[in-house]
Length: 115
Image (cartoon, rainbow, N blue to C red; front, side, top):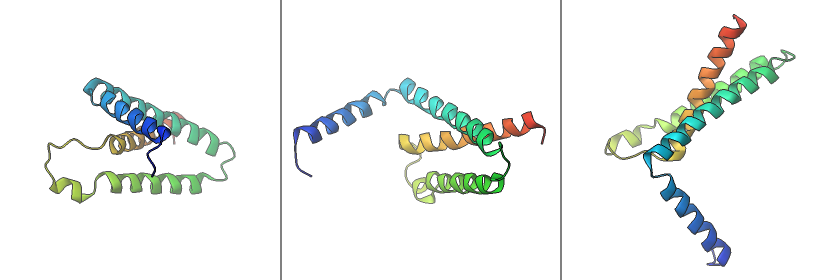
């Protein structure tokens, strides 16, 4: 890629954002936001898919597939062989938080509906 002003601006902005998220409190707040977004996604999905009850099986199959793919990516054994004190990538932690928030939200929706 050529070294243009736009590419330098994007690189500099991404590096500043990365250093901004190195603070543990900011990192924790981003992870909590990903949990809450996952919970919102679960509520949204159950509301939209349950409206006509035509696509319940398909939507549940897609959600289970997405959750399993995220689990496979996050908990691969290659990362466990490395030093256990190495920080995990923030994007993987955000994906895992989104998955956990989604599963929690679906369980809460199931208890609300009494099924």
